[in-house]
Length: 166
Image 1: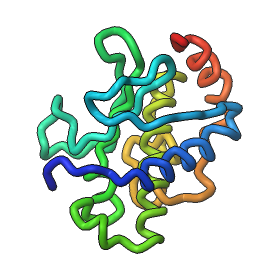
Image 2: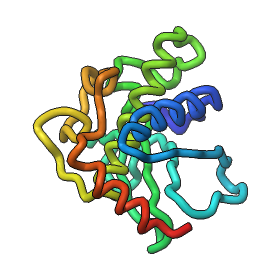
Image 3: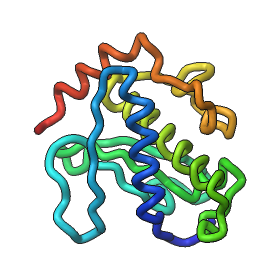
């Protein structure tokens, strides 16, 4: 697994667009901004942090993301870019050599992981046999352009968002 590596600004913006595309049909309007480590953090909403790995798990246990409240305050989704890239057969260390298509695929996959974790945290969603809430999101789900937030989760997702501190 590669050491910590930056995800280019373009991929972050593309990932945000993909997150918006997944959540807007559920009635969720998403806005976002990028903050570098050590800079002033945004207030309210949900933080999405891109990390090389989950420091709470062994490096041999690949996980694409996790959501939890940090220090009892803001809900934070941690997305582990190298694992997501690896799930697509891409090497994050070679991102500068990715084709346009590979970049778009990575953005989509990161968005699927983030929305999956948001559904756990905000809607209390459990894993399901397939789709967005599959316990093991594989390449097929990560790239499925027809993948949606299950309609039965829309009301609980909206209620979870309403409970967020502004």
